[in-house]
Amino acid sequence: MSARRDLTDAEAEALLGVYALDACEPDEAAAVEAVLARRPDLAREADRLSRAATWIGAVEATEPPAHLRAAVLAAATARRQGPADPVVDLYLALSERVARAIDDLPADALDVVTPNGLTAHDLVVHMAAQESLLAQNLGVPTIDDLREEEIVARTHELLPRFRAADLSDAVDLWRDSVEANRTWAVANPDRTAVWRGLGLTRDDTLLVRSFEAWIHSDDLRRAAGVASPPPEPRHLSLMSDLAGRILPLALAVAGRTHDGKTARLVLTGEGGGDWLVAMGDGPAAASPDVTVTADVVDWCLLVGDRIDPGELHYVVDGDPELGHDLVASGSALATL
Image (tube, rainbow, N blue to C red; front, side, top):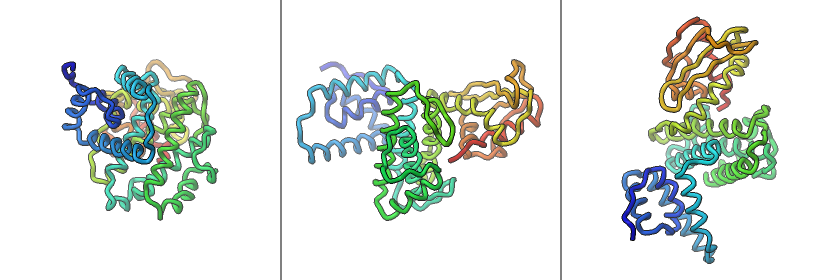
């Protein structure tokens, strides 16, 4: 037996599926268990996967394909080496964040009202409505008798179906829809999709859904009284880039355009960056009329309508009116 190599948290997480199947080599299993001992969230996930594997084995006691372990290990190795498709990786990572938030939601928190006015229970149904709507738009529907395209109406059509049912039924629809969307995205990297009436690239479609998954997973964690660490920097970087690129449209929707003016947005911290923003007609100029600097996580929470403009800590260098309008437009596209 080889000497045990310590694993990073990400490497251990990538091996959870193999570990749950009891398919790790002894040194791999020991290394995973060392991480689980200090990461109770991963330990809960490992336990959930192990129980699911046991249940599957009990109801379908069939010999697994000979190539199963090799395929799973190859996927885990690829994940350790870095995602070949960072946007799909983001979508899956933030969806898994939702799954963990749902798993951590105690029964007495289901009636807690979340920031968008829905209870925690109904927010899970809302997320199922969102992901199933995207699957419907992509041509891979996950619920046959629902065609409503307006998300609020779609949510309210689903709520009675799941109000008397176990929450797991809504979670199953959400999971099935995430998987359908992921499968479509992997097979169609250069396609466009329609989301909320907008034609978006595949990447931007997944970015929008990932952004909302982050916001809603944190809504559920707050309902459960659980702390919410920010996303990993590599994931936050992709979402902050979306937040910077949508600002011209956000200014237009908010009615705060300024033709011929340019703003520079600087987001500090890991996963941040800076963007030149055309505030109205005309291209962005190399020399901005105003520079707004803020923390990257706070700005993304502003875009997600979880921080009010008046609560955001930011610095303005240049025209204060332009800076005010840029910040005031940040959440104009929030539909959370």
